[in-house]
Amino acid sequence: MVWGCFCWSGVGLLWKVSGNLKTNSYIDILENALIPSVDLHSLHSDWTFQQDNAPCHKSKGTKQWFGEQKIEVMNWPAQSPDLNPIENLWDHISLRIQEKSPSNHSKLWNAILSTWDSIDINRLHTLIESCRKDVKP
Ligand SMILES: *[C@@H]1O[C@H](CO)[C@@H](O)[C@H](O)[C@H]1NC(C)=O
Image 1 (cartoon, rainbow, N blue to C red):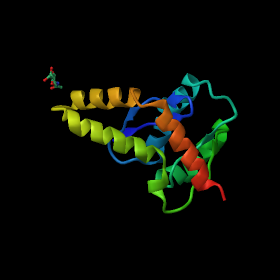
Image 2: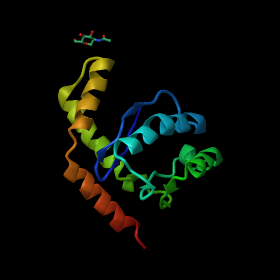
Image 3: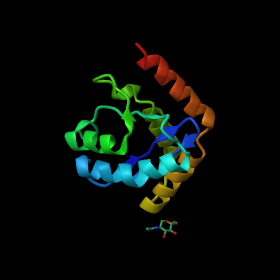
Image 4: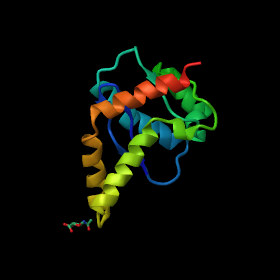
């Protein structure tokens, strides 16, 4: 599995995930990939984190971590993983990977990375705009 994030100014770091995601492993990802991504794009206090309602995203320990980091988390409608804008990027990557049909893990990872790094910024803008429209009351 792969974890990634993006914002208006571009994609963040990609992180390889092995095994089931539990609170502790999710917090590891946030520390190792979300925080450096926030730094990479020089986000200061004027941003909100969006994630879907997977159990490890909503656990007590994870909520506490966001609180300690002073990261604002967007309320996300229940039962709507498909609305999560990053799903669009995973679909895009999955299609590109199928075209390349990498023959081993290291080629697969490289193909994921190069697809991720070449994502068009306009795609990100469209996803963020559509998310605003969906989520606003
Ligand atoms: C993956 O395949 C490439 C090219 O076929 C090869 O150079 C590389 O050593 C392989 N990597 C592994 C981990 O088998």
